[in-house]
Length: 383
Image (cartoon, rainbow, N blue to C red; front, top):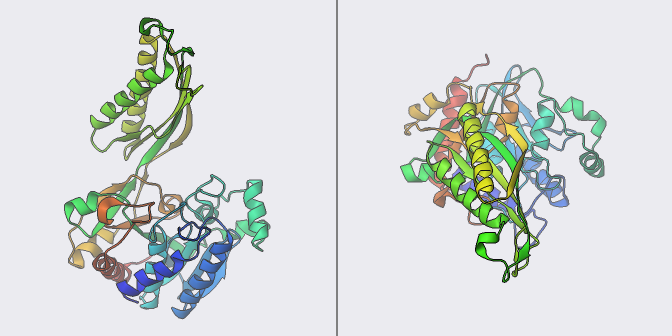
């Protein structure tokens, strides 16, 4: 299975969709059953022994004794591209088909994106021994013909000693450097907050500017301040991705604005101090404009180091430039890193595009990933 065949199979899986004309495939939906049928057949053709666990993850094993897991996910965001997650699954099968000297477990996770129930990493959390037990998720598992009572049996076997994931970068860094691959040294920590500016709604025509308590004007100033703060620290990213103004009429001064804040960095202390400054700016701006400001933490995900050694040596031994990088996005690798040493190899994303139908990958980069994967498997030994 070469790069062109791997890309062809990603295109085949793209046809397993909930929306004709778009790629949308969520946790244990009918199109996921079609994808499972295809992927199971490819695993079996590669000589792997295949089973499905209670979370809907396809698991395939070759060899005896301590083994390396290579995995990624099969679900997508709405109106997705062809490669996010899926490429990593097909590359894993291709490497297993080359009969490496070590034992392997290949996993195709049923869910990573969190689209159907708003809960990400359902598939990999089951392997980490932290299965999602929310009633709607359990109902979906039953409807798929699986037994939620067996979720505890989905946990990693003690024979799995390390984890490796191939994934498109989903950003512009590798392309800007002209590099085909990047070794992920950490997955950035992430803080998410809700923020509320509360002023006073009033008539847009009859209220002088000096008398206004405009919640949206305060929020707009704060959003610009958040951007300036993020630009002042290396590798820090901050996003106000959603705002809602109330009452939301063209002729009414907004009395309340709700917004989100997403801050990410590979060092937890840097991220936390940046969040503190950004929230303090919200309080200062609100006070100056005679409005109120409040915030609530929605998520505080610590940064996750990738600790599986040898991947950087495999890149250099395969003749490619070594670039170590942080992943700003979350991945299944950070879930499995709770249990075993984990590593990720990024492939260049042309145009830096992902979560979009224009998402693409270069055949020569897939060939590079295969070469590095083979070299890594030749030298990997369980700890």
